[in-house]
Amino acid sequence: MLAPSPLVDPFGRAVTYLRVSVTDRCDLRCAYCMAEDMVFLPKKELLTIEELDRLCSAFVRKGVRKIRLTGGEPLVRRGIMDLINGLSRHLDSGALDELTLTTNATQLSRYADDLARAGVKRLNISMDTLDPEAFRRITRGGDLAKVLEGVDAALGAGLKLKINAVALKDDNVADLPDLIEWAHSKSMDATLIEIMPMGEIGPDRGDQFASLLALRDDFAKRWTLTDIPDRTGGPARYVRVEETGGKLGFITPLTGNFCEGCNRVRVTCTGQLYMCLGQEDMADLRTPLRASEGDLLLEDAIDEAITRKPKGHDFVAQAAAGASAARHMSVTGG
Ligand code: SAM
Ligand code: SF4
Image (cartoon, rainbow, N blue to C red):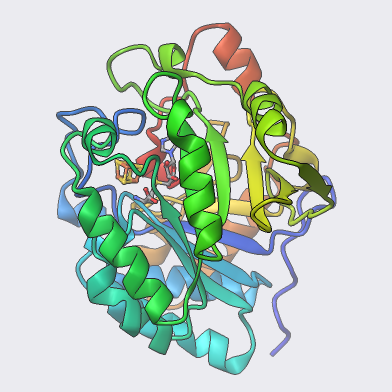
């Protein structure tokens, strides 16, 4: 049988990176991500663990080399280790270079060893502050101690970690240097994320927007920052902090443009394939998944969707108009 052709979009970009949201649920309620009274999807809407495996495996057959599981919080999804253990066969066969997760780390002390055994090598940990009170406020009730335990368990299991923090004007900007120094002292990279207009969450998110360009200028007064030409096809730009020896990334969807090298697509926990984080166009993959036990319909739907991958996102225009994308970040997983 001929191998399916790799996924190349109309702008010549090969799609090699798949991000999959495995649940819309979460044990935290970060104020910039979710409304306090989020209504979650009924279980039957979600792809089953078997369907998630079929979907990821179809993308691997089509040339995807890296899969990131996200959410909601991926480690609160029941059966998550069955999915990860199953997908690890693609690591063993060499078809997949990397299987990784973005997690809030609250469940990591329980899962770190299992993840390492399954061949997971790196994790992105989302954590916005080292101050327990600010953490509780930002996450609407989260316990920082649990997260720190999770981080230590993951480091103990030999996983390589990157700390991601959303820069929030009033809530954490002043604490970010501490967080970065702490991360670097544990040999973890750190990345700062500009708040994005995703989903209705209540109070105006614009109030919390902090420009990373301005933050970078502040950091340059404190530390020596050296640019690193590190292009992963992703939206982050990196510097080395000479004083700590660690790497610091900046993700600036509003003030920078990062679409030209985009190599990724995203699937929601209900099987909707989004070709761009900032656009509404999507393809329903759940219907072809459920229509037959074979994967031909699914593969055709994926091929067709990639022909619609847009050149870039609309965040700047949306933000200027005061609007936000209709989806919460927890739907597409960031
Ligand atoms: N629960 C996991 C976690 O927090 O790592 C995975 C899902 S979470 C939606 C993925 C990332 O999106 C997190 O780093 C979070 O900080 C980020 N995020 C959520 N809402 C955001 C927003 N409105 N703007 C920018 N980043 C956001
Ligand atoms: Fe949960 Fe992650 Fe969203 Fe925070 S950012 S509410 S941890 S999904």
